[in-house]
Amino acid sequence: MNIAMEKNEIITLTIEDISDEGLGIGHVQAEGCLSGDTAARADEGMAVFVKDSMVGDRLRVRIVKTKKTYSFGRIEEIISPGPDRVLPLCPAARSCGGCQIQEMSYPAQLRLKENKVRNNLRRIGGISLPDEECRGSDSGQQGDKPEYLTPYGSSEDTAKEAAVFCPIIGMDRPYHYRNKAEYPVGRDKSGRLIAGFYAGRTHTVVDGRNCVIGIEENQPILDTVLAWMDRFHVPEYQEETGKGLIRNIMIRCGFATGQIMVVIVVNADRLPHEKELVQTLQNTLAQSISPDEGNVGASSENTGHTGHTGRIWPVRRVTGIILNTNKARTNVILGRKNRTLWGSDSIEDRIGDVRYHISPLSFYQVNPAQTSRLYETALSFADLTGKETVWDLYCGIGTISLFLAEKARMVYGVEVVPDAIANAVENAKLNHIDNVRFICGKAEDVLPQEYKEHQIRADVIVVDPPRKGLEANVIDTIASMNPHRVVYVSCNSATLARDLKLFAEKGYKTVKVQPVDMFPHSVHVETVVLMSRVQK
Ligand code: SAH
Image (cartoon, rainbow, N blue to C red; front, side, top):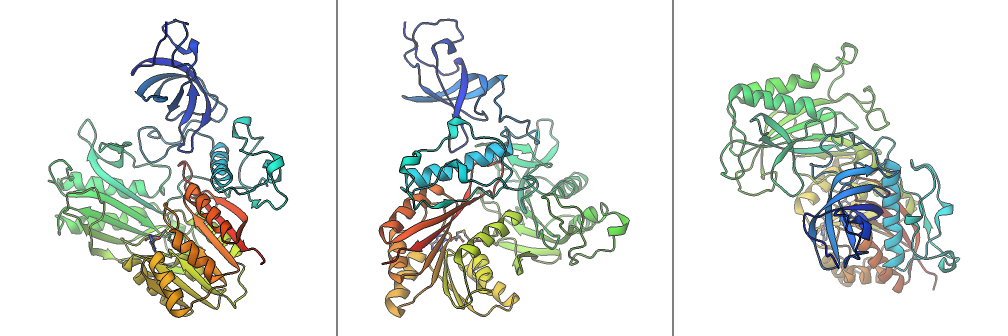
């Protein structure tokens, strides 16, 4: 008798591989049917994708969804764990939608990401890359790679002129790295006020006050706001009815300065008991500072306590409390209107020597330790001597542009969001950098137009596009501008690979590839690529 897989069926599986999205992959076996029926299964060999599973895991899995050629399952029981499985630091690692692979050891996470980049570049980009042996060992990985991670292609197709694939840059301590966190406020089953995260794909709030990705100071700040709400009966916002007041608490920290901004997102223009909130929040972190640190002011630097990411960061203090009004019935977190209740309306941070002012609505990279490594890589790939004209496309608030400006003759930044351009201009002034110019518009409009009308030229072009990658006409125009080098910063290695192939057709060869782990415990990976013009 042939048996086909059904929803809710329980099967036994061994996880053999892991998808780019971090789902474990196993295959249905005849003996996997728990009913004891060992008859041939019609679905034998069918792939089952299992959330939160690791390679080598032997699992009892409940089938939750079936498709024609594959299905999805959830772990019922771990019969025996695979070698990469670790206990997650966070008790909500599975229920929270934030982390996808916290139960995977960090070295295994890095291998997964490195292989994702390598496979995409080879498969989609047709890039010739060397095999594993030439990798370094300074990025936290240990041991040999298991066979299942052996990349596509063999040594025969690794041409002499293969690009250099640098080992992924991981974090020394991949916890408490995020400088920004947004916590929706709700109630748990017993009616207690909580702040945390939405459970994956739902709108149920899971307690996440002690999230291990955010800074440790988040918890006392959240506890203070919740205690104030309890004490003065300030109601939380309810999504279903649109009633209530407190929607979200956003906390943002400048790691280099220790300045913390607390943004209370409210369904109104005013707050009851505002003064009491300000008073209690001002004191929250001050109390946790030991007496010998107590005289450290908010703007002091380099005097700080032990860092959480393997670095010494300065003492952290709340330096601004802001009320953000959002009355819209949407799941957009922040409204447009801010009112500073106390302190400063922005925080300052620094990457390398460059200072940035960050207001509640500004875009800013969330992992400062890795951002400086990412920008250093981009800068070293750009190989500037001070004479170059550089274009930085998709420049956001000008972070990379300003970083490059110190070493270039002139930098032009292009960005579509007007507020970001305003921030970029302000940040240039703050740093007394005057060899930059920012242009607001779409890269695919601005670049061809400037090229046609003003015959602009560039020695180096840096691009950092969103996930969908570059428009073909951006690649065409870059190639026509004929720069010596193109540096591509990408958050999506599939579109990166697609674009590298197009660049290759236009005479730009991939020379070096450097993945950077900006988001430990998620499946995302950032990559910096250096392309060089092939001699004609
Ligand atoms: N380089 C910056 C920002 C990178 S994020 C940093 O490191 O901080 C990508 C940026 O591209 C965003 O700021 C987004 O607003 C911008 N963007 C998206 N589509 C664009 C387009 N078609 N043209 C120009 N900029 C665009």
